[in-house]
Image 1 (cartoon, rainbow, N blue to C red):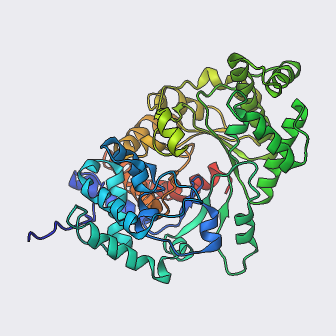
Image 2 (image 1 turned 45 degrees about the vertical axis):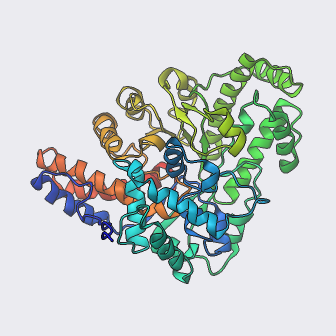
Image 3 (image 1 turned 90 degrees about the vertical axis):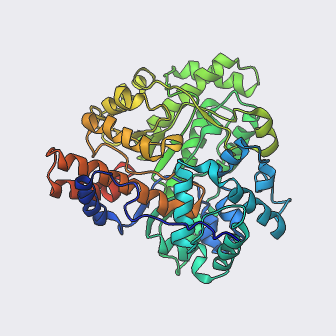
Length: 476
């Protein structure tokens, strides 16, 4: 029987190839390698840490919640159902046999991840966290599954123990406005818990007034806030009430994602009339778009008043494959990026709040053509605007390098957001942040070697990018 190929992590992975630049990059990476993880936007459930229950199995931890992993398997003919995607509480978890079959599917398709950041993150998790020393393949799948499963049975692999092991300083979740935030409250009241987990206000569904089911959401918002949502004024008051609830539970930001970045401002009578039509189910698609865009402006107004940092990541075609969305639900990997425009779209917001002392806006994009043309110039002028890190489909080594080259010369380093992991895959958090630190070390090392920056300045800058910058951008 042939010997399995080893799984090896090179100490200089992602660092520049030029030996002179690499030496500087090594020194810079050492400055931040062991610094805490600041994660101001992600999707790991707070309940995992509140309950601190053992993770069930390797598949439900490493595969099922990670749409980066599942979408490429789907692209190669794997049924998402075989990966545990879309299962309800009534369905229950995958049984051991099904979980093992899913893990075999990942390992037997290992070659499809070549050259992707997904492979990088998975390799770091398997090697550094679980001690796996063989490369995933059809032949090694069961061996690796057993090794990971054995680790998960150990107290050291419970959620809270991993939170400490990962060196997380703060972890933000993403939450529905009607969420009671019970898990966050439980953590705050638990004397044995010493970490920091904060919610993020995510009102998208409540702003899409033309979407099916919106009226039921508006009713639910009224029930939870105890503010009548039958009128325009009441609807805005209910949204503000929930923002206040989130702030009381530690929230520092409100997250927004729509088809475009527009925040067109309506008069109060115009908005009220459109809202009444929406409540009666008589709003046209054009009217729904106009009201949604105005609601984004209203969210900016509220952020200027209550201090929640406004983050915006538009330009995604959600649920591009309708049959997949119907069968499995949202956030399963079939969202597709599209072009987006920022300067004209955000002019109403920036005219009103761009120099407001309280307002802060972090702009993320999936259209990297906007990095140097739009996002960086906006961040390079408006005190309130920060250039968000490469996001989602762009949180990959080459895209991150392009971002630094495109943004820094116009906005500098200090008007960026710091790295955002934006992940549901808990165990990938340290791998993702270390990837960003290595890439920043390489970028700064190149500036040092070109005599555009002194090494002591580069060392100070990489520390800022790792900790100070995200704390500032997200008011942490």
